[in-house]
Length: 446
Ligand code: SF4
Image (cartoon, rainbow, N blue to C red; front, side, top):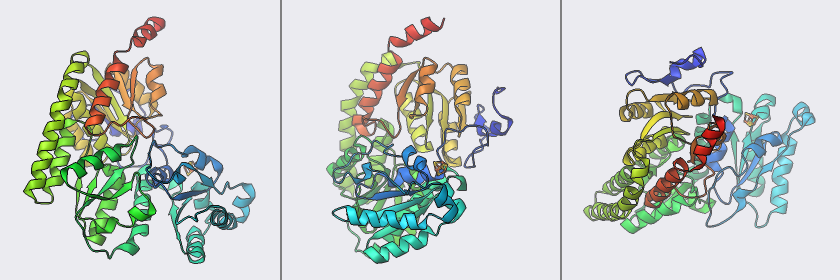
């Protein structure tokens, strides 16, 4: 099947449903993976904390590459929209960068008003090589200023993007552990939602209408004050499991908070998630309200889906997204539209997620872990995909192939989660797939 694929990559690609694929491992050297680095993984999880200061201790390129790459919205501070860097140069690499890091923290504390309460210090590749004692600088700054200065030691070479997620979870635990001893109260934390285009607000609104208060959101539209209340919640609901499952495990161990995995993409997953969360409290009235709410919203959205479905039935979709949970929801969402997922890939999917993916797709669908553009191109052409759903790095690939595209990643400007998101999604898929422009592209290429 795969003449154009590197030998070492073949075990991470499958079109036979019975065979599992190799995943959760480092990218193959030379394969030009679509994955970002460890530091990027950590930063995208922590960045939406609205009043946090993120100092990138490394060359300016690391800061620039990850500056404001999420469409996370805020109802409070705009601090997270800024990027700070120690801008390490050659002499810093020779003589060490700790003085520069200390000076950067001092400068922030002297110039910013009101004074920062929370600073994350990201140590990137070169700091991992020269061995600056970032922990010591952060500890000293915490003592000097009486604020939280949390190190995130994430050199890009130390693993995969998944390690970055884990480091971000450790940093959040570092922040909230001192607040462990709070009385429990009725309510949930939402983990792994980054409030892209306001999606957190949509989900929070649903839960509140059902009668379930949201105590802390991690990390979309969060702040120092709301994050430290997280230990008081009775339940964690975990949306992006890839980035936040580890945090949920740690919070269960340290604070006794159980968790439930959810996804709010598509009718089936949104409905099941709301019911599952409500059922977790063992209160029949909550479960009943969740059922009623989902039924009402489904009844409102179905006529819209039915309006677009005839234009989409039989079309073929390629999916390449960050985590497995989203790929699974997208396969179901395409099924709801009468479409078929013919290529499904993720950057950081896990073994159990690929098993679910394999159980949902037809035999012959190509499933890939940690793909590169050449592989995506090969299989999208081979499987005659009509549309690619991916992120900013996949968009040019689709357009160069004269293929429709739907952005389902960090930067999108409209929500795709919840019932509002279902409407946006179906309209976007229709507009993109059925745009007259593809006819002209194909004619031009002929
Ligand atoms: S941490 Fe390393 S791999 Fe990541 S952007 Fe910086 S230099 Fe590149």
